[in-house]
Length: 593
Image (cartoon, rainbow, N blue to C red):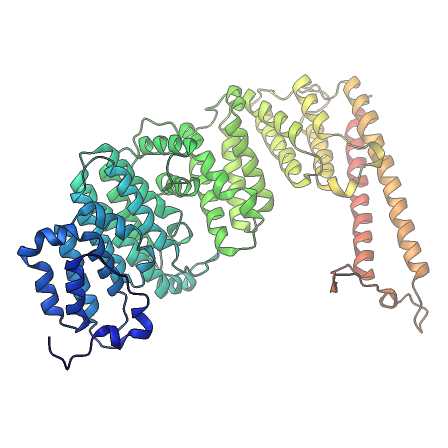
């Protein structure tokens, strides 16, 4: 070495010398001296010299640590010679060094993925090492590598997307450089697994680990991407998903078997690669797209049962209550999944015994949450149609038990859902009556009506809280009387004992409750008018009596006097409507005597 070449240790003394690792290996110390003078060609020849093969093998730990440190040294040159030298050196070491030692060192370099190029380099190194490691515990080693590589993908930034994205919004989203970036890295990850699969396709344990590594992508980053077509063409995200399923089905031609095995692992918590979110998104793609064909031996109801945990995971109340728009993409997937599976069910396929299944009740609860709380009208409408498809899949007796169970378990303050159940009962009753099967008659009819026509707190019931269901119940009672005339009486509703009972326990208390509530609201209105100061025209000016409430120096949003009066007037109108409907009901049934 010439004296006029300045050592790199002196050039970078402030940035690198203090942090440079110290090595005991004589082989690595000699290589360090060469590289300090930037003689990279000499260093590479020294490293790859066949006469140094044994020394290289014995110095694998120190040499790998040195190269991993050196490759991260920044350079102002267009061509980073340190990086090129380290790449060649690491690849040679991966082929000829101690595979186990180098594998352990690389596992500790997870913070070294500072560029996409380095990320792909480490994947190549891991691939070479994994093919050289002994087969004992190889599946565990592969799982550790996949976990590290996948964690890097989770750090990628994803642009926010709303559930109502369409048209140009989706076009811009798919061309976002962050989306392109993450899809490129994801494709590299899939290619890495495909390479390993080619080498270990005969080993079932390794194939299962590789499948879990693939599915882990579906939690992060792929679960929040949009796979909708853009201007009639496949989105770039969907193209990557096709590669994903091509690789997966080459290992598991029947993905249902894989799904069952994953569920067992999840219950045992035996794998860090897989979680419920990954399985949920996998089920979504499996059952709603043509990316993977399913054997025809599975019934639609069996597939629905398999999907229930996924529906709950993606469409549960936790996501419905969130204000993060990108999380609503999962709710959209849940609604789509429910829609596809429920519409595949055949009419009257299920009898009442299926309602003993607790998982099915969990699905019905999730459907209720989506119908009532979903912020998207389109998704809510889709879910309502799915609910009707599920309801129609039961036999006559099954639909009766279905309604009875839901009306019994649903609290009265859940007014919107109980109103929907009343409408569902009304439609099913009408269909049943037209077919002349008269399933809803006598005891069965009266049991359901008793659950619907009820004041939970007697005349002191808060009528505004259940006003929609009250109005629907009154209209249902009137509808039954109009459809089933007194001279026909196939339902038995004209029997004097039941009519007297419903008037005594519901209609009369309801009328008294309306009168009590009306008097209360009128009194409140009069008091507000009397207490309000008058302006110059002797007209109450409610703006003069406005008060503000502060909590921790922050003003709470409170209804002003005008809004309070509007609410009270609206309540009085609702009481008038209820009373009018009661009059209409009495007009129908007054002829029973």
